[in-house]
Amino acid sequence: MPVSDVRDSFSRPLRDLRVSLTDRCNFRCSYCMPAEIFGADYAFLPAEQMLSTSELVRIVRAFVALGTEKLRLTGGEPLLRRDVPELIRSAKRDLGIREVALTTNGWLLAARAKELKEAGLDRLNVSLDAIDPAIFARMSGRNLDVQRVLDGIRAAVAVDLPVKLNMVVQRGVNETEIERMAEWAREQNLTLRFIEFMDVGNHNAWQREHVVPARELVNRIHALWPMAEAGPNYRGEVATRYRYLDGRGEIGVISSVTEPFCRDCNRARLSADGKLFTCLFASLGWDLRSIVRKGASDSDLVEHIRQIWTRRTDRYSDERSERAARGEVREKIEMSYIGG
Image 1: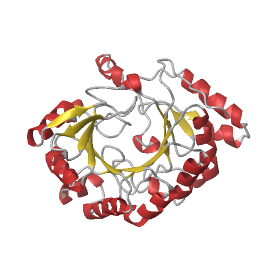
Image 2: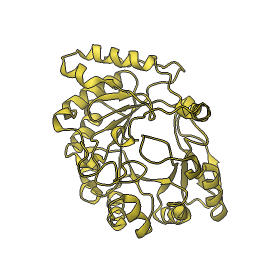
Image 3: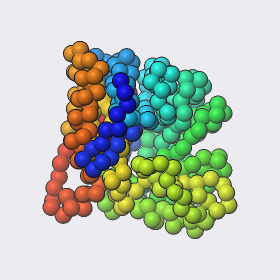
Image 4: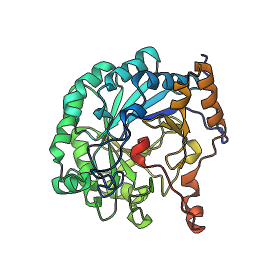
C-alpha cells in the first residue's frame, strides 16, 4: 500500500499514532484514574475485547500507509502487557516506523528495560510527578514507593534507552516539587517535561485555578538556572523547549490549557479495544476492531481511516474558553482509556 499524505479539515497531517495497549493500570493517580472511581469493582475491558498483537499490527500498518511516522505505546500502563517487545519489533522491523516510543509509570521498568531496548524501542517517557516520597505516595493513589520508579529509570539509562520525564503539575498538590524535580533531572542528565493539569476525562476534579501556567513554570526554573527557548524539532511537537544556558540539558513545557497548540496537532489515538479517537478530549470514537474482525481488506481499512481523518475538525483546547463561557459541559473519554 503506497504512503498517502492524508490531511484533515485544517490541513493537519496524520503523523503520530498513540496506541493504548490496556485500560488497566497499577497506579491510581488522581488526575487520570482516581481511586474513588476506579476501585476494586471497576469493570475494565475483558480480554476478548482487547486487540490482539496481530490486530494491532494490522491497524498500525494502515496508519503507516496514510503517512504515520511515529508510534507511541501507552495505556493504562502498557508494561502490564507481556507482548510489548513483540509489538515493538513488528513496528520497527516489519512496518518500518521511524520512531517507536513508550510511556510508562516506571513501576515495572527495571525488570523490562533490557528487553525493550533489545526489541528496538527508540525512546521512553516515564511519568514522575514527584520525587518527595510522601507526595509521590499520595499522588500514586496506592501509597507506592518512588524509589522503585527511580530504579526503573536508572535501569533504562543503563541500557542506553533515551528517557524523558513527564510531570503533571497541580497547584496545591505537587507544585512544591517543580524546582526539586528540575534539579534532579539536571543531575541525571534527563529532560523533564512539565505538563499543565488538563480537563481530560470526567472524574479528575479539574478546575482552572489548579493549573500552574506554563509561563509561571518557566519563570520559576529560569530564576534558578537561566534558560533560552529552543525551536521545535518538528511540526506538531507539543512541548515548547527551553535549553539551560550552562549547557546542562533542557526542559519542555506542554501548555494545553494556557497556550493551546491545536493548529499543529497531528495525533490520532487508538484505544485498547480498537476505537479510533481524533482528539484527547473526544467524546466518541470509531470502531476499527469490528471492521478488522469482520474481514475487511487492508485497502478498505486504510480508506475507512482516511475518511475519518479527512473529516476531522477537532480543536478543543482552542475552544475551551468559549465553551466555558457558554456553560457547555460534555462527557469526554477517560485519559486512561486512550493513553493521554
